[in-house]
Length: 422
Image (cartoon, rainbow, N blue to C red; front, side):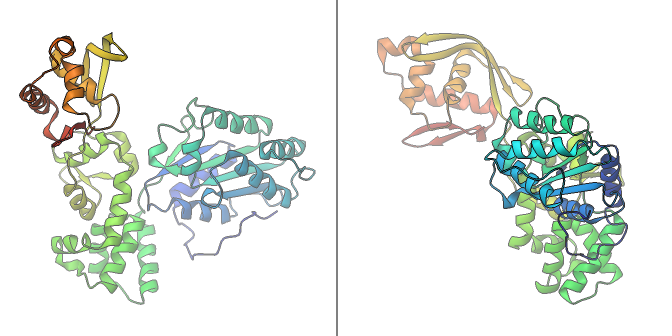
């Protein structure tokens, strides 16, 4: 039987995304799940749609495919299960669909009936799952695991943004060691994509244009579309090198692509990118994302000069401030940290007891704290007797902590108070 979804042919060549397609085909044949992760604009959805439409990994009459784009559904697991069941019922899988209010039970009963067909194989493709994964917890993954245990011929391909890399499948039920990282185009795929862009824009690109666009885009699919549009319709001259980079970042469509990738990164990853030239080695995740590549001089560099310039315009990322409490004291309704360790990222910051209490006060919740609130927390031993802690004492303490954490970590709102920004 044919796949449920028939996608329009986008004229991709036979070898399009060859490495990724082969890995997905191998996973399906081995009946193994895969978690696909990519930064925005890498063409993850396009890859999955192309994969679903390919015949080489499926056996006609024996493979059922359910493709779900979760952007078209509510962020509701029950709606997801109901839609999978509906698609399979239309493919005449099992003995038909029972009408119940519970989508999971519909799918469970359908797979239970289909399990009697030893030849049968099911591929569930869940695309753009970010919204759903934000809403679900461990029970959702246990339900998916129950489905794969029930029907041993079931394979789940789930696609999400990079920020879910450490959150998906918290109990390692489905995707432990089974992740596929989608990076920028290969050389061959980029050449074909550039030809498609030329056809879309009604132009041709010279060999020099090809080299310059390869350099500017880093073979990133989303940047390719934005930058080729800027070159043809916006008059940006790729031969101008660094001038072209500056002109491109004045365009909303190019900065939008860069900003979407930047938003996916953790504070530590942002800091690593901003200090890339000073690093002897980079995290494995930055390499898996395709954000950094090894340069000719053996040093790491960002994949695109456009994204590099974008990163250079961002303020230094603030690492999270953590306190490991060692002792607290209850003063009325307020719990005060009187001993503990302070960390900026993974680095311990040596602090005095007063500095510790200032940081602990500002970390209680994200808001602006007045000088009176700070004084009552930090100078609690004096507060009950004097209630007259000078502004200078608080301001001097703020300056001390800023010298240790960095000036950007505490913001002053004159006339209101102070806020911890990390």
